[in-house]
Length: 295
Ligand SMILES: NC(=O)c1ccc[n+]([C@@H]2O[C@H](COP(=O)([O-])OP(=O)(O)OC[C@H]3O[C@@H](n4cnc5c(N)ncnc54)[C@H](O)[C@@H]3O)[C@@H](O)[C@H]2O)c1
Image 1 (tube, rainbow, N blue to C red):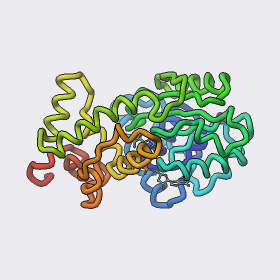
Image 2 (cartoon, protein in one colour; image 1 turned 120 degrees about the vertical axis):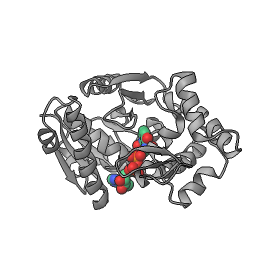
Image 3 (cartoon, rainbow, N blue to C red; image 1 turned 90 degrees about the vertical axis):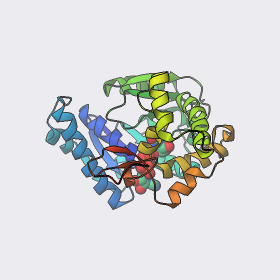
């Protein structure tokens, strides 16, 4: 059985670990925080139960869950066929992690980053084998979203790039090839432009998040609107992403309003906190922020 190390067991890492296990890979899901691993365990069990109830799982939830090993260190890097990093979106952390992973993993093992914005060329700087570094940019919630951008760094070998495409297909996802690694790749540059405008419209009192979301769904055929996406991904993550984007020269795609930083200060972190642009019931039902308390 081929195996995958996923580094970081937060919102994205736990989802990536889960879909790899669903596809039959043995998964080492690693995080430095014990509570992140505990949360990942329960999120994955909950998600597998939901998928099974909808007839969307090939194997039993138990079988899939047993393919995942929860770990606190990177030692399994030496044993796996794939490494996917999904830790926080900060350049320094990724540089440090890739230096360490490059040292631990066999030179044949591709090292992928799930970074939202940071080019793999940049991340590969601290490695001796930049030809095996690439971007695999998943979309959240990972068990439900079909797209993965496969990003070629300047030094990524054509063979590793194609292995990335095949790996994504092996997960039952659809790869989009990004041949040149500019910050934000393709999808996040387009989304960020729309999201910046949406945040500024709310901050200036032009429209509510709910109305903008409904508008984007009905007017442009988006599956869900930008504020639903932001709540799902976490508003604290959005703040970090905004800082990283600015550092990468994408300041023109970041809202300069204080709306999201203030929401984060108020504990409105999005779905995971039960409140963000919307409120969420304990069962996960989404309600408009202005409506009565969740029942
Ligand atoms: N949130 C999204 O919608 C989304 C979508 C696509 C890509 N991404 C990218 O995925 C990555 C993870 O984002 P997330 O939303 O899952 O964040 P998250 O905050 O939910 O999870 C990050 C996890 O990384 C762990 N971590 C921190 N330092 C670590 C280290 N040195 N080693 C191992 N684990 C470490 C943290 O403890 C945390 O559990 C980021 O690069 C982000 O830009 C996020």
